[in-house]
Length: 136
Image 1 (cartoon, rainbow, N blue to C red):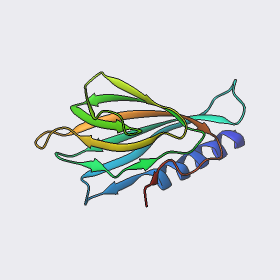
Image 2: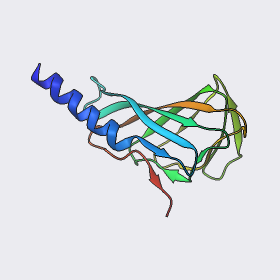
Image 3: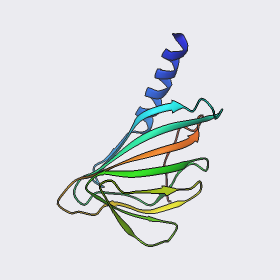
């Protein structure tokens, strides 16, 4: 029971430190789950809900070098560009992946009038507490 309580406390701390509302970019990022992967020692799976208001975006960024990401649009349409590739628009139910070390240059709501949401599922080193590294 004590181990469970400590795990929940750690998850809550990561969620609070990773949750970010950026009013200037009309976006909100929240860790919605954090679970150690039982058959991969040292790895965790984290779900991150990214919510964009109309015209919202997140600045160009990278993720931890250990992170593999599977992102699914759950509402609206999202523009995404990774590693200088084509800027693509993904609609509800569509997805993309990001490999460790990828550069996510465009992450934005494709609509100026409707909200958008995506769920990004990270497989990442358990001891990694920061999930986004904005470009300087």
